[in-house]
Image 1 (cartoon, helix red, strand yellow):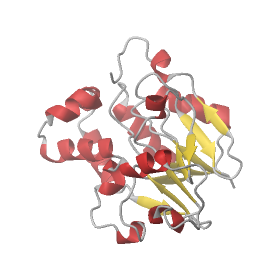
Image 2 (cartoon, rainbow, N blue to C red):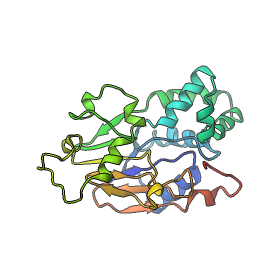
Image 3 (spheres, rainbow, N blue to C red):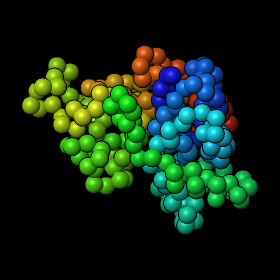
Image 4 (cartoon, helix red, strand yellow):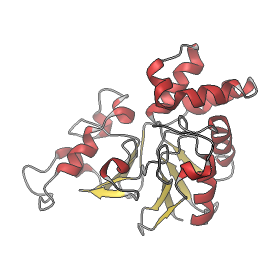
Amino acid sequence: MRTLVIGDIHSGLRGLIQVFERAKVTRDDRLVFLGDYVDGWSEAVETVDFLSELDETHQCIFLRGNHDELCLEWLSNDEVNDVWLQHGGQATLDSYRNADESASDLHMMFYEGLRNYFIDENNRLYLHAGFTNLKGVEHEYFAKTFYWDRTLWEMAVSLDKDLTLDSPSYPKRLVHYLEIYIGHTPVTRMGETTPQKAANVWNIDTGAAFKGPLSIIDVDTKEVWQSDPVYLLYPEEKGRN
């Protein structure tokens, strides 16, 4: 069984289908999705429909992203957050308003069922963004940290590459897990378009909401598969700017 980690999709269903084909995903694979399923391209409803159906045939682990939480808040109370709209929410709002009314109720169940983090049998941690508690995720005080935090990645990137685990200054957050897999902060901000490792943290968000591809990584072999840059698959749309 492969454990495959999928980066932030942002409604780029065409990219997801393409990268699934390239990775030759089968029912024997365990699929860990890092969150941010919506907000970006036009196929928010279709993306969540696809994932919900996939969950019936494959072993899927769906983690909660900040954009998924923002979408759930809108679906729950119909209050529009202007900041959300500016960061991909408008495309999601339009997608739901053009869909059958029943989609909203069904998808709320999907969003409500998302997990904040997952730890596998090899002590690898998967979550959307990060955590701050020095003792690990089980001791985190604020759940929103799991899908909003950027300090974990910023810290990992800034570490001296010669620093070792037994160093007294090595960040205590990192020593609890063999590896940590996150999304949330596109590596395109670093000028990269492939998954990046810093310390024992792997960032799989390769900017699919912007000008980058959607990525899948095999956690055991570190083999990577990518879609075309997702914006090329939606030539009539702007995505997120």
